[in-house]
Length: 138
Image (cartoon, rainbow, N blue to C red; front, side, top):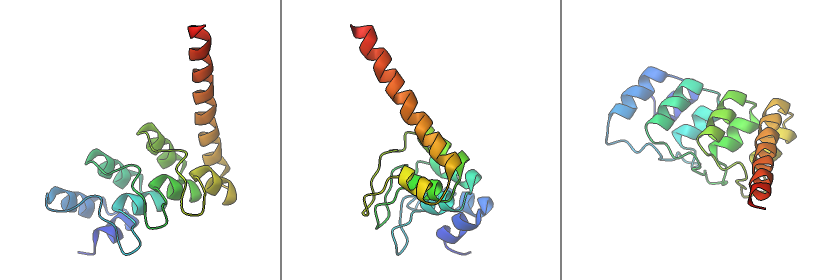
């Protein structure tokens, strides 16, 4: 069997499940560049594998050697469904990598408008909630 990174990259859910069932495996291990299995699944848009990894305890905000989170990779590659899922599981939408970029920066830079809209919507909802809480306290 190929390594877990290849299986996640290719979306081989059966192989990933078998690997996850081996309790000796480290779910958050990184490859030579610090990419975890979750990084690869998010980068390649493998939603079913992302679900499996999250359900088994993958760290949502794990960083690779360049300080990219899985959200950076999903955003830059335009995987809106995965971006929404990561945000739902409390991924840090303001995480900054070694170049000073957030997932939103990458979504905009790579022309992933749908992903940028998701991020803007989350930010707007957050600001509205803060405003409501502020008004309710007064």
